[in-house]
Length: 352
Image (cartoon, rainbow, N blue to C red):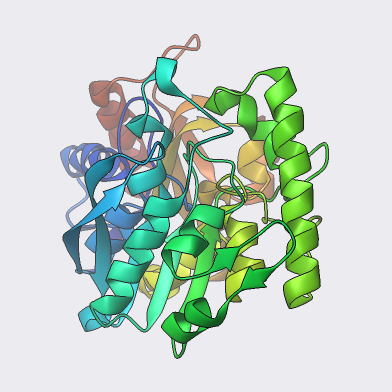
């Protein structure tokens, strides 16, 4: 008997992706679905490492690192494929959650700890490193991470010898949770820096710093991250790794689904049940749920979604070729029990 693949993102502020998968799975079983396969997912932001390691039956290793303010912390990275592939989540060391609200310093915060985790993964033998960006406290364009990997910078030059030696024979990819460029009105500073504690004056300061950083990258490497789509992800970490370290930038949802072998799993499935906290126009812009629905449609597999709140109309549902069950009403945050009940309603649809 073919399984129903349960492949949700997190319900932000309520359930992690693994918790959401369990809740949906319990509801499906209670509704009479006999076989399920849990595949919690993420799109590059917080929780991506855990989702990828669980899906790939990998392992998580602890490693020392520094937080956005330079304090020593214990963080972690994931290993997949027998240790050949590493997953480094920016939020682990450089996440906003590491810094109390009164401590937030969007100007001074550093991504150095993320670079330390990349270095630790390479030292453990990883030959491919996937850096998942999002949820960061930093806006340094990745300078701290690159310095942790051996690069040295002045205002007018870059010494990349040690960086290139360390990354030799290592494939570096960045899973981006947004498509913003590094600079400009839609860039990292103007869109995200205020969430990290920046005042309007500091937003302008960060913007000018990132413009100078992009100009340095252009002079030293021939790669200009200023207008590069996704380069603004993670406070510009994505753009810094792309320009100075030769990383490949990819939409997080697509990269994660490829890494966990989603297409093959969906191909053999009876149906796919995905989910997220809120279904809205951003979903259609390329979030994980949209990517899951698109791939299910392309594979000829029915796709259902259990969501906390549904702000799309019937036409938009048809656009994604997805059947939706909203767990909560009246704008409330969905409870675990409501998610389970919504999944039971999906089970009844599956059974005809």
